[in-house]
Length: 419
Image (cartoon, rainbow, N blue to C red):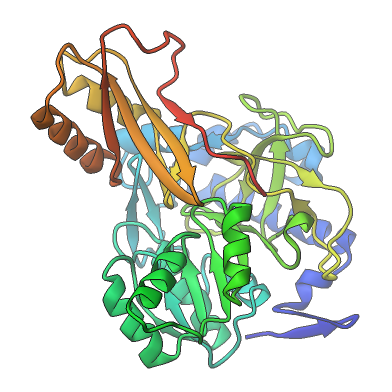
């Protein structure tokens, strides 16, 4: 752990308080090194960057001339050329691989705290010796490992709680005197409410870092009333940490060190004007899996000025929706092609859409589909299909044929937009 103090503020790393121009110069030195590595070792980037003058990529204007890479591109590339679609160098030293919805295969980056989550945990109040419940899954997707590695870097003790088994978790939280939580925004509430119903209230939890979905104001207020200091961070399985809260939610999220974040006009690779809402595009520097101008599909904007916490990097206003219909529900991405696959498995089904809503801060899914008949057996079968394809439970509602709008929408996110 590398704790640093400056101007009365404490940071995980002194890099968080460095001069913006120093940061920018360092980032572009690292970028040119990554571009050279990618052209030399990655078949995909060797082709994409064949005509690029790497030494000329020395500012954001030059970076904007490079192509973007999207999640859908990854799916297509990996369909044609497993394991990593030709993006990873042939000599990559991969410790673990993950299988995320899409499906998309991600390798674990190299080094300690490979997803760079430590700074977010530190900003959320986690410190050496804290016992942290990691309520992200350790199966299929990397979320559990992302925070496990970061906690180890901080010197925290991790309880790999995962999800489910809430009664057992209540016992464990009390037994270990859990002081910190990482997981989705709603699951800690489920645990605390279960503890209350069992007459076994948990009072040891002081700090929480949540991700995998928006932290709505009603839920933030609920945690404050329980005496829990809660922060959220923004990251993806492919990129690791992108941004994280450091103080009041209206101050947005400070962009993580050691990555380049751009905001571009959705559907293009062109940067938007300062403060304008657009798609988040990120470049990271893992030599074993070079992701250059990776388009996340998430909408956000750069917030003017610097954070009052003393960190000098730019800030994102937070998650502001999706640039496409792909959406994140309970920490899992749901893609339009998954809905199409479900529809194809039922020849009599007409149009269908997945409606995503939230009730008291908890995500809800309803699969609405057109069918000529309606019975419980069909409802159960479709519900099982949705769960198998999306790895999430959903209510199912059958409507008459030709009753859904002919608007091309297959995922409708009706949740409130919050920071």
